[in-house]
Image (cartoon, rainbow, N blue to C red):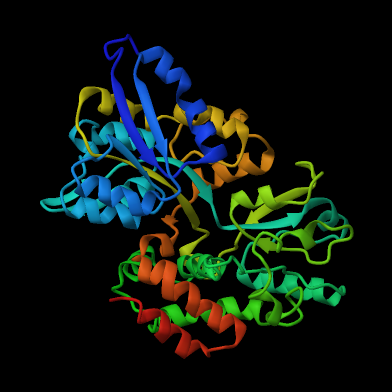
Length: 402
């Protein structure tokens, strides 16, 4: 901060484009002014395809932003990534992040595990959104367990409405919403260690543990009294449109499970007083109410003092302050002031992340692309649409592991 690196340039490459790129550049401006370091960010919608060419061609950026940690794992394994612990102490990292984040950032290098990067922005996924005013007027109460969630769904059905609005259509990515539900339910029905084994391919999709999670999901999805439009509508309803029936007046459905970003798809004119969320409840009490998240991990490819300084900056809540204030982002690191968050719903997300005993990354983003963005999406879609029974769908998904 005292200008030792004035005039130095640090290159950064990532997937932020359009509005996100503007928000990122705004978030680093004060740091650049104080230090004199120029963080030269280059955003690309073809990041996943381009980063391998750059790194393997000897033209790696100083820092790269990976929204899919599974992609980073390969570079770590090949010894291309600088171990963050070579310049940031355990004591410092433990002060900045909860242990779950450090666990998720630990990856296998050629000579043992390393801290592969630092966590930047994140998005909480384990959220059930509802129409606050209508919900309270109807006298409904927030469920704390899976059984209470089903009782609430029964109560709403008895009152004449379907409880849930669900849609998994997303063009070539159709099915990803179903994978999110599966991941959330896996975390609530088995150990975090089994979740990690599942993500790594050691626990097969055909295992009874995974089948049990799919059956739990089906208890809600395939109950015609529970779902707006019934099971047949799920595969053809766009994920962005699926939240809208909840916020009609009166609501046509009452509950919608989706990540924090879904506020961008809310009908126009809603105020923070109109919406709220509760965490997807515990299923097996011993596993509590974990937080499923997505997020960005920043990895370092070139080791120079100014690059270390920028990486250290990215471990601080200040590095996200303006982004948090603009909405749609939750800080994975400690130290974010609750007053920075744009509304109460986002403050609650930060609190949920800060208190969750288990935090795990979106499983499909950690699996190889052939599974996570391939057979997992397709197999869940086939199951939901009725094109395949559960055993067939799970076998189909497992076949994606090469």
